[in-house]
Amino acid sequence: MAGSKKQETSSNLPGTNLQQRLNATVPHNMPLYLASVWQCESTEQADRLLAGELDGYVYQRDRHPNADLFAEACQLLHQAERVAITSSGMAAISLAVFSQLQSGDHLLVSNQLYGRTTLLLTSELQRLGIKCSLIDPYDLESVRNAVTSETRMIVVETIANPLLRIVDIRGLAQIAHAADALLLVDNTFATPAICKPLTLGADLVMESVSKFINGHGDVMLGMLAGREEHWARVAMVNAAWGFASSPLECWLACRGISTLTLRMQQACTTAQAAAELLAEREDVESVQYPGLESHPDHALASEQFINGFGHMVTFRLPGGRAAADKVIASGEIPFCPSLGDVSTTLSHPTSTSHRGLSEQQRVELGITEGTIRLSVGVDPTENVLGNLEKALDEASE
Ligand SMILES: Cc1ncc(COP(=O)(O)O)c(C=O)c1O
Image (cartoon, rainbow, N blue to C red; front, side, top):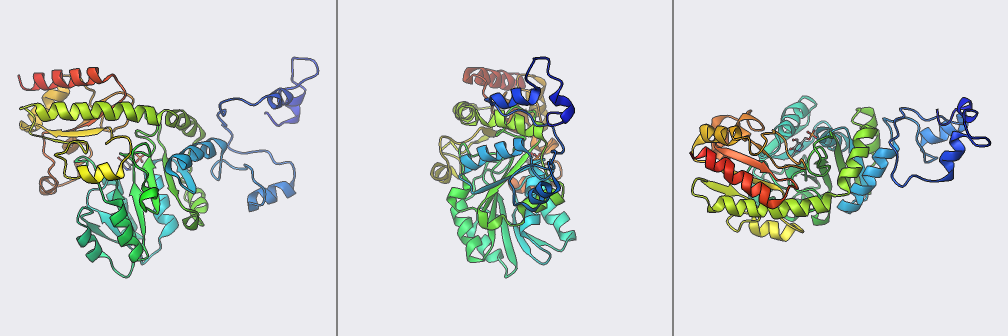
């Protein structure tokens, strides 16, 4: 419409048309560009655009303005040279591996990754001839020993789900680089508001934008950030494998990311207070929060994180599934099997994110039926603490 000849005569003001009015000023916020294709003025221009000789847009799956603007915001926050936006966090991980690896390569994969990531890396990639070994990312010596001459990538999460262990990004980067491999860090739970893995030596960082970085529970999106030297195949793989993002999701994520730092500040303050409250209660068996001195990785978190210890808090009730059910039934904090919304929510790992693990695997990780994971939002601290106390009081009645 905006570029068509017909529209130029459709103005209801004498002497101007829609295109002239659009050109007179620039909107302060970038509009939502719901265009699957852009109109080219000549075959020569189309040729040059598609060859990459001319900077501009032709087809949404290859590139679009709302993704470019969101990528710029991520680039700034992560201090990255390059960023690609994808349709989901899983698409961002897929983009990382399909752009960097090939058949015959070997991966070292943390044994505490998000379930679908583990499935993709350990099962789907095997079908394509990419081998992988599971590692304990908190034991650097064992990671070093697991490296083979074919290892090309190590994959870890900054803060693991649900026990919130923290990886030593600098240490893992050294091991990866000594083996001529890349370190890929899933930074979803941390976000660049508290951790910037590229500045600690990681080569690639990805995030599920569907979580706290967008922060409003209304978007499905992912991002991959890294350095120029690893970017040769990224745009092509993003377009050819169909991982590309939608403009509406990027537009919403631009609005979300603009308040990320503020939201994270508030969430970290409340999460710290909630963790301290839980640690005081006799009806709570244990609390995991990197901001507590009792957390096994508190010192590492203090060194690697900026501005706080994150918005996730996990705790264990001695009464198992029955106790968790009572907390959920109290309705004080909504039970949502995801994280990173504006409001505080809770999840129950054994019935949701970790239901695929065997009892034995859960025991080894320290996840029980009474384990509850809180995703703290931006609600006033006193409201969150009040709701938490009411839920726990009802559960112990
Ligand atoms: C740590 C982590 N990484 C990746 C993903 C996948 O992201 P998405 O759901 O946006 O595909 C998730 C989703 O829960 C996650 O928690």
